[in-house]
Image 1 (spheres, rainbow, N blue to C red):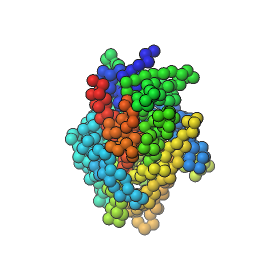
Image 2: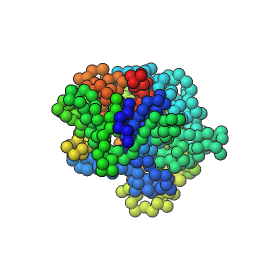
Image 3: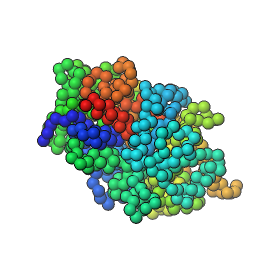
Image 4: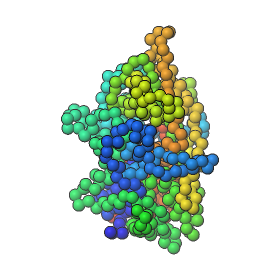
Length: 518
């Protein structure tokens, strides 16, 4: 086995998988080390009981909370990382998200780069990940240099009815930007079949725009590909030279065997918590508090969005199959009754009984799944998302064994509740036929600390080594060949899904690395 590469990438998710493809396309000799294995293609991929109740694809890796209580995060260690089970919602951050914003709970800091620095890479990311959408519908949307590369996904009749109702109420619903390999004009030959197993499930058809399919597989499939992937590789430590300014070895445990790899460049992309863990676990005499941690910022400023999954039950049936076609940003930056940013609303995949039991296990414990299926037939399913603020004390720490402790308190609870109230009032108004009409019923499930899909912020980038971990190219300030390209680099997280920004940034960093490597 070859042990030296131009670039060693640790992790194959949105950041690492995208970077690997870009560098392979440039002909660079790249090794990707993935902690997990290929996610198995099996009937259980689309079984809601297995996925939502039995947690079949959750990778066992217990963490501790601020009270030293153990919990199992919703981590997915597979080729493609967390993208294997995400909903492929690919929003650009708004232009104002890159600037300082005052929230009800504090300040969201400005980024050292602005939207215009990321815009060309957003355009490339949307093409790479097959993003469907329509410019001009969302009043908060940022400037774009090109139309979406793929047409918007059509609303099914019940969703079109919802869109019409939103518009009648004065809102501006828009086609949610979604990354799927779909050709609605030629469905018999489309990879995506517009099923109801996109959000939260692995895709049996490899038709979802995830980092395995669009990143790793695309890179491995190149003619004379220079990309190598090794699965089941748990990276234990990064070893530096005596001066402490260069990574000289990557120490790996693979099925109980200790291996070492070297690279001209080493890129960490393990997810915000695990990237921080690896840097902290790699402490040495020159870096006693962990690699790249002169600023004491590694592991700090953990964010993951303040989210609610809302199931609204009404009288009218909802026979929609592919429900993830609508989003609303009218309250993204607040309104006349609330002077602070509020957040984003989007549809989730269509709920069924087994999923509802997974959302609310205690509330629904005595209800048979068939009865929950009856309720789900009349559900509208929403995802409410409010910005989480970076707080130094919301942080990841590790002990000598590598045990993660996530000390975290949520922020912007009031803004999140304001978003819920606005949606509830809107739906009540839209569906109240007379004064005796049955009121809508809502199941609102707050995403607890274990919901780590949108984690970000533990290795923020910046220009000052005293208050940031990475420079503007996402290179560690204190090490010449160490980079971090997952969502760890975010100074703030906005109120839209972070995946497209992570992908765009990986493309941006790939250009720098290709130039550096010559």
